[in-house]
Image (cartoon, rainbow, N blue to C red; front, top):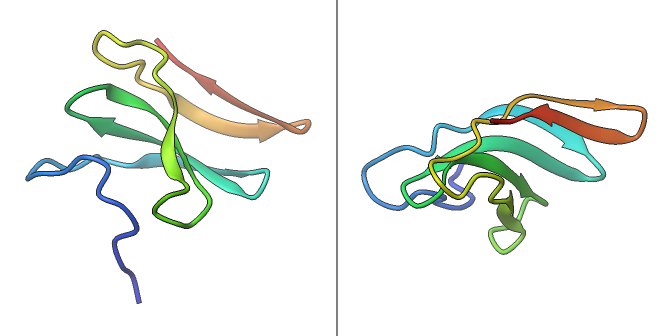
Length: 79
């Protein structure tokens, strides 16, 4: 079955997770919070291991897109 791992954006708004990429035994994805906007998150599959990778654009989010693994590195576009 499917269960909630962690409520990234507590409250009634969704975190709209998208763009999943598996890299170095972690799952990376874009998610939105009320505080940070849209940023890259990562998880090792545990609640405590699910966190924002970096707040790239502290004013409104970085809108990360096209997460991809190539040549042993994780790449994505951000604003």
